[in-house]
Image 1 (cartoon, rainbow, N blue to C red):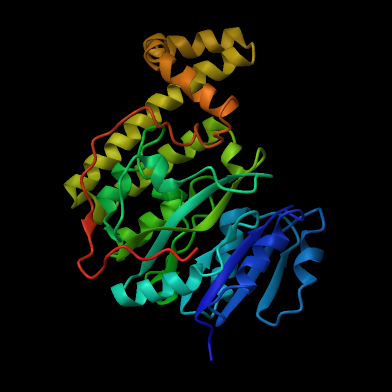
Image 2: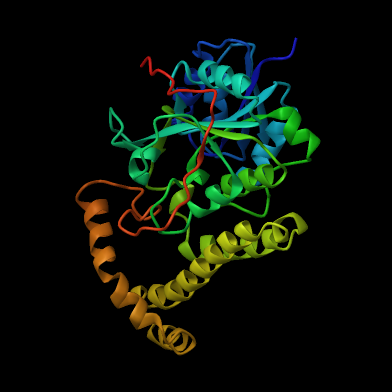
Length: 349
């Protein structure tokens, strides 16, 4: 009999963390599961730690060279046999009841995707400092069905919102297979966001549970810390490419939301193309970029207060995701739909 859930864990040089990630899956209250670890060319003892477990539900796949997180996840998805596929980063972990809770709610809602709230916990801390929903400023106490326009509108770069691209939904494997949906292997940043977008544009029923069962560890050298220019470039390319689809062009609200996101990405990219050379002392390069972007000084002055606030949050308050989600900027958001079959689930933790 196939497992109920396949948990896929891409791993790269996380020997210090992966044991906790694996244990959090094997200790789930839902026992009908498999764990597929794809080591992506680690040079530390990540593979040794993974193979130290004797539980027959665990499988380890080793890439001889680093292919990237998206390729590693795709390998795991192709090997998965479960009805549902759940993603876990190798430095994060689950609450014991996460999979049981999400499977139950997903089946009740006939969901194709279901995500919970996310605990944010600083590396080395003993308790979370916040959650994704709390930091969004939204008041959500019931299960919400998330449509694609709302998903885009609330995940605008450097603006307040739910930023569900940071969530870790559980996916119905049959849906992924039916629509040939995989991670984009050209992306190393925001790959979760675009997988979710592929699902939603293909009609996935996506639900958000306002209880947190996923622990997101904030580390100084995680992929979130990669080059801003690289991230912005990838985001511009991915957004423009997605907008060329016929299904997108037929949805004016979605086109409007994506066009706004693309404008924000392009403007922010131009801003950083000036700011980064200044920080690096490359004055001639900075001057050349300023001539291409004469609005830099206006942007800098208009953002100055937010720059100071973000640095206070990061360096004084220890908020390591403040540059991922700038809370002081507001955007207009449509209210999402509340699924009529549900009231707020109880939190037994």
